[in-house]
Length: 74
Image 1 (tube, rainbow, N blue to C red):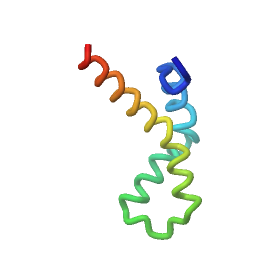
Image 2: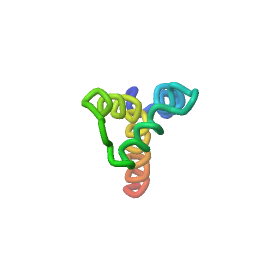
Image 3: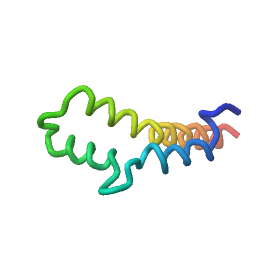
């Protein structure tokens, strides 16, 4: 099955890495607000940080698409 197709691992990644740090707000939420506000002053490290914290959510979206498309083929 593989780690990229395991719902439990991906959801655990979303809840831990994706939302870390939890206080005062999740990192990904702050980065997304920063980008939506124009991204003024963002550096390469900030984009890498967004990718790092967003990767579990991208994997979750990928897994949803794979499962929906495989059900359509049955």
